[in-house]
Length: 478
Image 1 (tube, rainbow, N blue to C red):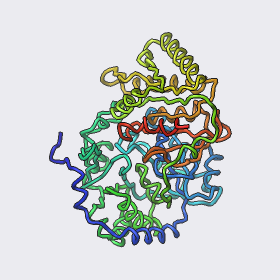
Image 2 (cartoon, one colour):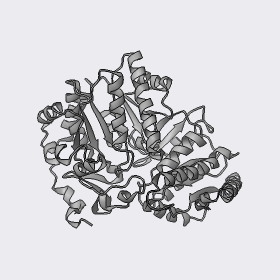
Image 3 (cartoon, one colour):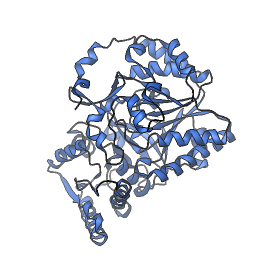
Image 4 (cartoon, rainbow, N blue to C red):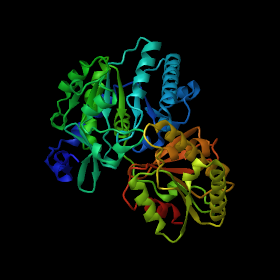
């Protein structure tokens, strides 16, 4: 552990404040001149953690992208679910997405920016996704991408960046991301907490730590807007821009300078968590959703909770949920994936049991075995494929269910994506808002299995220990 890099939340009190009214005024003025559609490519469904009233498309056909361009809203999301892809699948998908965006934009004569929304704890196919987007855009047009903005700050999840070091908050302690369980992810692991070093590590030295431009908290809070815009105007060769942030106000200040630079002719791609889309999209705050806003049709049936994420936080939340007496918890023995016949029988058992309970009015929580598959060194792709097989089996619970649950919660990024796209057959959803900070709710479309249902998408690495239980209690409180 790099103890010298650790901080406590007391450090945040030492950061000078700014006039929030003045920043909001500057931002509103700058965004009024920003005539570009914002397209957010979300590598799992949790990236809508901060927005509302925004469409999410689950495919990237030219037709869907054209619909997004034609909407009144400033932005739309495309769910790629690429965190569940192999590297080869990721390349294919992002090349196709970029080509289709360019085709739709050319047809409609619209300009745009693309935000690659990734995990706030730095996991995912980076730098592969943005590299493919850049190369494809430049190969099919005369557009040149000057730089890439790295902004993983996400306050609702306790992800802060200070002195270029990305932190994960645990209570009052700020732990460098490289010292957390997220950095030990078997597919997307890393060691660096300093974002400049992380860029060098993930790009295998193609972009060095020294070549990155960073905006410090001191510079942001000093409101050096003109100077920052000038610095951004000098970015070239797809060099990286690191944004430090501990509060949304930091993102807003940066965005004022960013929009000035873009309006002067600069082109950027973005690798960010959920904070930037909200700010650059001009999305206002909205109160947390009530039960009445989420459940419009009472079925008399129980709800369904599906837990797939394996991170420590999810397991702790699951244990709290199990303490409730009014809920039936069913373990899906996902380790049987190594034995196909037994795995199929296990899937059948879980589905039959869950359906029986839901029909009787009881809410069911189905959770995968808490131990992650470990096939040994050099088996990342094989492990990912088995994880997909498990996710497909979990998704089949929704696909094969013959009763409409009163509500549906999915815990985990890949799990919630597969449940939404494969289980519920969602083609387009509208983000209703958040049931808790950082926990979004989709209102799913008429084409889906359960039209109009409120679908709660609960990221695996977000929320307090009791939050899953609390969301169940909100939805179950008839």
